[in-house]
Length: 100
Image 1 (cartoon, rainbow, N blue to C red):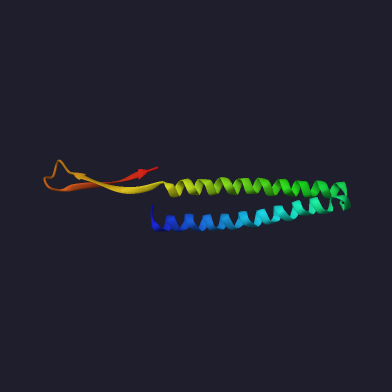
Image 2: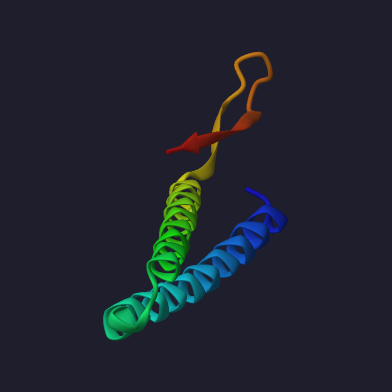
């Protein structure tokens, strides 16, 4: 994996982690509002807040899935294997092997 690819994966992981933190904070605010002010909210507003909470949970699930994919990508490593070239005496060939 090239350095550019590693940089992109790390940048994406940081962006997703920050998004996850923001979504968790939003979910906490909506949940707190539902818990503390439920008696004062109309049914329409309760429905709106429940839909908002469901949307946040869906987005959070998508981000968690993408972060898991990134973690799996980072575990996949490559290494170079060298072996004798039978056609040319004393020379060696090499190839890249992916390890997952």
